[in-house]
Image 1 (tube, one colour):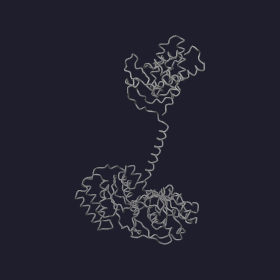
Image 2 (tube, chains in turn green, blue):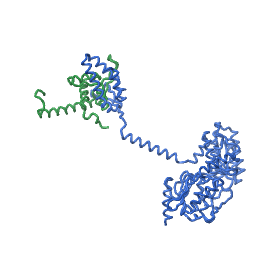
Image 3 (cartoon, chains in turn yellow, blue):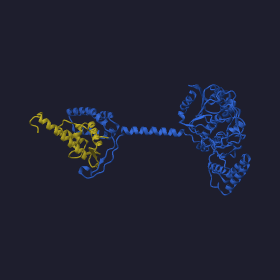
Image 4 (tube, chains in turn brown, purple):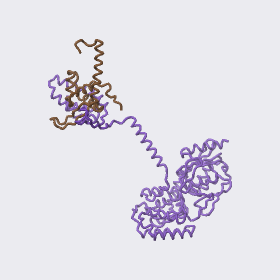
Length: 114
Length: 477
């Protein structure tokens, strides 16, 4: 089946991909990371978070990492980017950068932005 | 908001989602409860959760929850080759449609296969009837081949092999006798009994004696020593009898249930009354008699029943189509009956006597005497056949076809064989022996085992339409 579910990429999914760019995280850590990288504007609740995670898993953009039960938490599921997920995040970021370029050209942005 | 409320809200989510993420969800809730304290934060948390439960719903229902791969530590993120599992996707519309089509065609195919009767197989199967089947067979037989006194004996022969065996087992006791292995003594008795009946009843005594010698010889050579199964012994004896005499109408039958001694005897008065009642209730197998457009008479006859009971009904039906410009006999569901009735139904179609082939005849040649004053004698006749058309119905069809008196439309008929009179050998074995030499006036093999070929081959279901078309052409001229 063609991959149409995440096209266009919802912002929650994009934020999750970005949050996993550096390291593998579990659900709550992803939520905190997203909150941090959006300056507290996006706090993912469990429904949105895990639905998005499931969608990304199904599209092969992230994957679950098998963890030995080493942490104090019983068994948290950790996730990390796949190469496809990394590529998609890059494409999406480039698309936003293009948008940003256009916005800047149209003088929509205030001067103090990049 | 309590954990319980959250759990309740999550009931709106797909079962697959809940199964996979319920623990994670509660964990996330507990983590946030732990980290976010104070009235304002708690209020914000509650607000978040309610909004989230609503917005996440759409996303959650859009996922397929197919199996996803679990990455290994040597995954491709590091640039090393890794294993990828083929993912199980939810069924696509195409697969569902293909599955439906395949199921339907399989069902239709199965239905078609079940509609093809296999007389030979049926004969074999009847040798191992279950008690219930035996009772059903016996009940059916009362309707299909009934009679009194010596008629009963002939009725046992109707339809040949299949029915001779069916009769043997159907008339048998319903109680199960099990299948004890045959011992040498019983086998000897069976061979002796078959030989005795053969020499006593077969019309060609020379051949009977030769066949008896052959059977004894084979027995001495130990040809039957390895056989422990009754059905196999019957099959083997049948083959040996046929090869010894060259007569394909000889047959040895085995019945798992015991064959009562009184088999050829007179049926009880109550059985006769019951038989008559059933026949009359069924309008003597006359399913339909009507005039089709173009004044074509149509008679659907599902059996050739005893004229003694059904004479008036059948004569009335024939009279109803008497003045027609053409006649269609629908024998697609006709499984046979009395040879006398077959002749009586055919009689109005002729104006002068004709040679009439009847493998059950007692004298060497039979002539069909026409019915006086019939207006049908030179009208076109069409016979509709199916693969279920059997025995007496085949005799009717065969004769009219050979006499070029009728156009046969439909399928090749069932090919009912005809053995002779059934004789009981012992509790489980019987032998069918022709007591007169059958002479075929047409000088060629009849329908035994092969059926009657139609002149116009169409599916049984389309036969009536085809006959009407042909009749319209002929009559319309």
